[in-house]
Length: 223
Ligand SMILES: NC(=O)c1ccc[n+]([C@@H]2O[C@H](COP(=O)([O-])OP(=O)(O)OC[C@H]3O[C@@H](n4cnc5c(N)ncnc54)[C@H](O)[C@@H]3O)[C@@H](O)[C@H]2O)c1
Image (cartoon, rainbow, N blue to C red; front, top):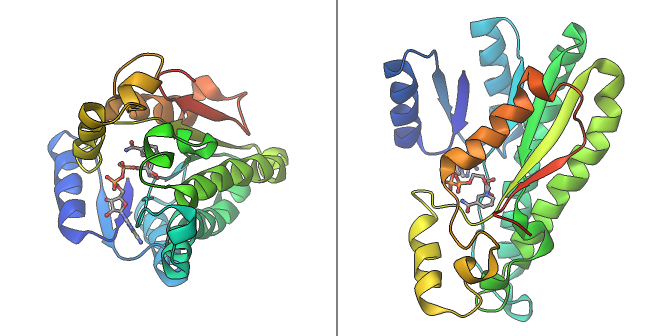
């Protein structure tokens, strides 16, 4: 498994974890919104493993939250670049190799926020993030059509409020403090767990999902 992340220390921990559990992995530390870094990640993966079966475009973030009338242009641009550019760059770099083998799976991370989320929209603002995650849905719709004749499946997973290391504390705080909280607004009435998202990504990357393409699978505890 080839992993790319801007956080070198976090990357090292994840690579060590995978190897300790019996897997194979290496990491490339760098900014994946840069064309050269995205290309290098794919080249290094090919050099190491000889082929690319699955690409997961996972990186993403909310950037600085602001209501639309207070949003700074540079903060808007940062989120557009972060959430869309790396997905485009890594996909573009990997696809020629998948086309040659007439085989491949691409899974991109969208978000339930593509339809707006009450716990951010009413209190903090989140339109830049929601825009990019709706963009990921548009991306997989079109690219799945472009790649269908090459036997490459392209899908997305749209997580709801997930209790990750990075996002969990803020979501738990919203549950304690606001009316339109994740727990109140989510039909299953709880935060999701990281493995519940990972399982959906694994399914879309597996042979069991061979006749599924162009779909955004919501893992949001209901809609
Ligand atoms: N956690 C949630 O509740 C939630 C909900 C919906 C969607 N998502 C989406 O799921 C994906 C993963 O979310 P997460 O909560 O695990 O996020 P996270 O912040 O924990 O992980 C994102 C990773 O991307 C890396 N990264 C950031 N900028 C980078 C860059 N320029 N180049 C390379 N790496 C970079 C970070 O270092 C981090 O390791 C994201 O696309 C996110 O938008 C998350």
